[in-house]
Length: 170
Image (cartoon, rainbow, N blue to C red; front, top):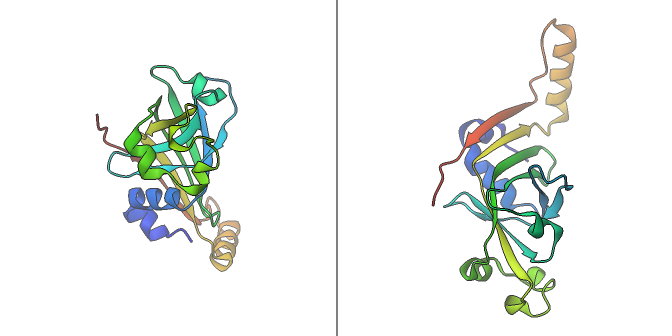
């Protein structure tokens, strides 16, 4: 359950926690005219980077150019948290990150394991994000809808929206 207090007071920590608790989000490259595709995120909180395993011959990997920007959109596992993150996306076959994030699930996609010639990684350096955390309480939701319908110019208060900007590390 997304905490509205945390969304107000510690939104960055909540964002990384939510992303760490999902199996996949949707990743797409700005201006590529390609559909977003599901990708499993691996969070590096220290550098505000999300790492993704992929193969070098995927449409997504082949579409990345110098200066490519991407969006990564997530829905929390309880469906009461949503986020969209943006930043530069690049191909980076980083052996240390491969070792750090390697798992049995990842291994199933690569015939030759960590030495698979098609294995590479994508690094999304998050520059900013928008988050939406909403209540999962049907009682609170109903109360807010009722209040909004009884008062002119009143909208329901059922969540928190925040914009986050991240420092860049090089």
